[in-house]
Length: 279
Image 1 (cartoon, helix red, strand yellow):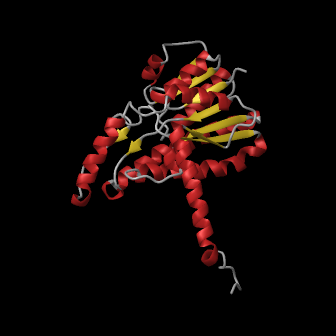
Image 2 (image 1 turned 90 degrees about the vertical axis):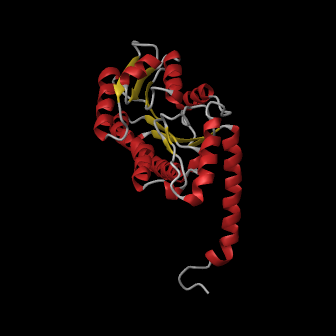
Image 3 (image 1 turned 60 degrees about the vertical axis):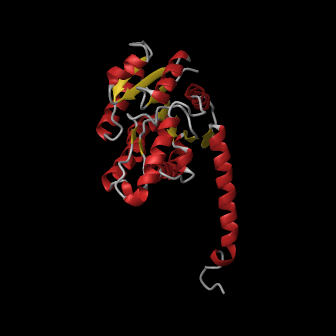
């Protein structure tokens, strides 16, 4: 069934794949990005089922204007795919407070802004589906990812809680944890690389930057296949609350689940006897 699908960060990478495949599948697509001319060009120019909108996800005003434009053009919004994001790489001490705030502003408050603008439409319809791209780094802390993981762990908590808020209005939520996909996240336009500033980290920083840059374009995951998977989920009546994408992510999440269970069990004797009046 044809749906109105709103995609953020549609100018390149995974966002372009999602929007392109949604159009091919007969859906009406709202493709948004900071540079609408580039978004439209990446999707092959004007099309009857395509609305291109300007959207900087850090701007609530942009988000509200884009949501209104979508309703004006197509009458509704069935699926929101929060895809836009960026990556501030580096060890925690070498990430400035301003960079940390920028990371969280884009990756956490960004999708919150767009969702805040779209939810009134979905509540009015008594139907909708919010899909937000997190990362395996939203479940598993990783070296050199302090800022990025902090933002994505925030996405996980927000989305896991949001589902309870909106379920009475027949609005579904899905949070997606991809592993390493060729999504352009590691290209310079999406990643802010650190400048070594602390001697203790300098050698590790230089080596890690070189290793990550060498990985760009060689990640095992195929973004076109991920886009198809997301559109399959968007078409399901009972979509999953979580979708772990990629064999590397599944392996990592399974290991993390076992680790958490072991830690809970190890905490039982000391941590499970802390109630009032307990011996």
